[in-house]
Amino acid sequence: GGVRKAQPKLNARQHEANSADCLDMMENIWRLLLATLRMLLRSVRAPALLVHVLRAAAVLLETCVVLQLVHVRDQAFQLLSENIIPSTGGVELSSLLRGHKLMQCKALVAVVYELASVMAESWVAVLPVFQRLQTALSQRGFPSVDQARAKESVQRSVMSPVSSAVMSPRITSPRTNDNGALSPASRRMSGPVSPTMTPDPARASSEGRRISAPELTEGSTGPNGAAELERNSERPEGAVSGMEEQSEGMPDPAELQALRDALDRLFEETARLNDEAVVGMLSALRRVSLDSLSDAHGAGGDLPVSFAERMFGVDKTVAIARHNLHRLDALWGTVTAHLYQIATHPRPAMRQHGMKAYAALIVDGFRYTYGTEKKRQRERGAGGSGQKEG
Image (cartoon, rainbow, N blue to C red; front, side):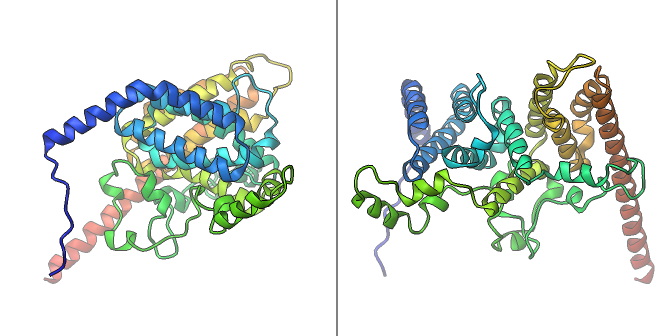
């Protein structure tokens, strides 16, 4: 026989002691870690170095989640978000889609996919970044699913049987690949999975396309990253590396489309999160809407940001509700409280938007309930026929 590898012998008491030691260590150094991370994020621009800083930030966040350091987790997400879009403002939207800002946006989306089920209050810091990022992508010609749907149905009534917003295949199931397997990002994002949404293990084991969450292991430090770093170490001082040229140039449209898809999918695949996680996300979206509308209560005057950006919280709330119709009763109170605030807004355009969203969601709920009941009746009928034949 071969040589057996030694396995660590850890009982529950040792495991608890190790966890306590890690917790004490993090409690003592988390302020220093955040200060160091803040300094690096502000100063590092080269993609080959920045990717390692962003990986370290992701590891720090995951450690905080494992050790249940909620206050550190929230501050770390706040740091990442404010580094992309400072609370003082003054950031051009176009800058989010190039260079180090684009890398930071992709990293934030990726880590949110990993920790979506345990974000809680951290959503309040992250969602405004996604709100501005969606606007930047739309201005570059990559509209969200909600914006594309609104454009298609602008001349249609929301009560029409052919409404483009009703009974989309996206409502009934998470995103799958061609083989019917859940996308890798769906599995990474999932927290406690609803029993009705549990994937078939045999089908979920097949590999899907990695198009959902942006990757930190590819791109500027991909397969040729080591060779690129070696070439950069030999270049004359003051010369610009290929990676730096690429980082400051125009991004690849496919890269922006992948980021656009990842943002949409984040809200679509909330069907795989538990009730508490979804309610936390919906509550944060309501706060985003309140912040966006806080200076828009007058009857006149121009809005400093676009109407679509102000409606980000509303549109994403409706998107989440549509993809969670199977448990809408658990989310209805949070959803309707948000929509009611929009439907009673002083601005007519916002009231109309809120009422349309309200009406379309009610129609979706009735159709989903009707379709579910018809399916049960067919199943009962098929079962009864089988018993008679037997």
